[in-house]
Length: 110
Image (cartoon, rainbow, N blue to C red; front, side):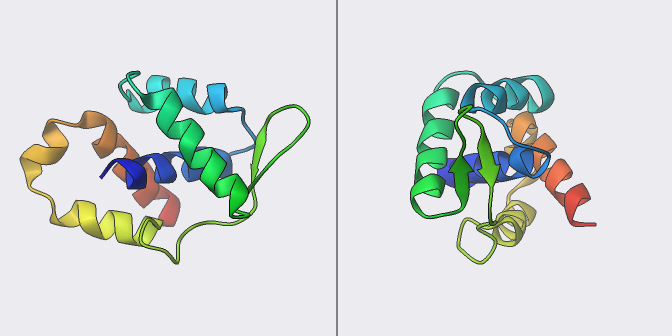
């Protein structure tokens, strides 16, 4: 479920405003308690894919700007929340960072 998680955290945080990769990583750690291990690489990969496919733009200050959401794809928000709605309760208990992300995404969709 890795790629889908990082894609959604990136989109959520960029919806709130332009950010550098480092700012996205720090906010993911601070606000959602994402584990730091491999976070930078996964966020960087997702940003690269989004940049190459026209979903984000990186400006001269190295900040990413969200141009469009991936919502119509398999890694879109609606699909992600559907998947999380079907996981066993202990899955989210063992991954509080994903539970917090899920709650934030649900609030955003209201």
